[in-house]
Length: 101
Image (cartoon, rainbow, N blue to C red; front, side, top):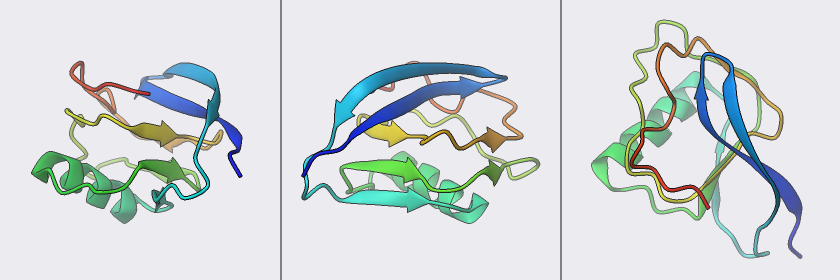
């Protein structure tokens, strides 16, 4: 059964865009991101072109301070924040070429 939710994109220095009322199909495969290592793995998979899920969901607050996370460019799927926070970002989470649905 689909669920209503929010997608958060464009995160950097307190700037967040919100897209309400997004529904996910019941069989969606989502990557769960709950640690800084998960976030780096997600970013690296997108960069390498090997990300093969329907989207990504934040499942905890994450501190990316001094973790070397670079702006993610080319991500074309759902990133749901679920009101969790990614702190320590020094640049935008997603680049200009990213398309959010």
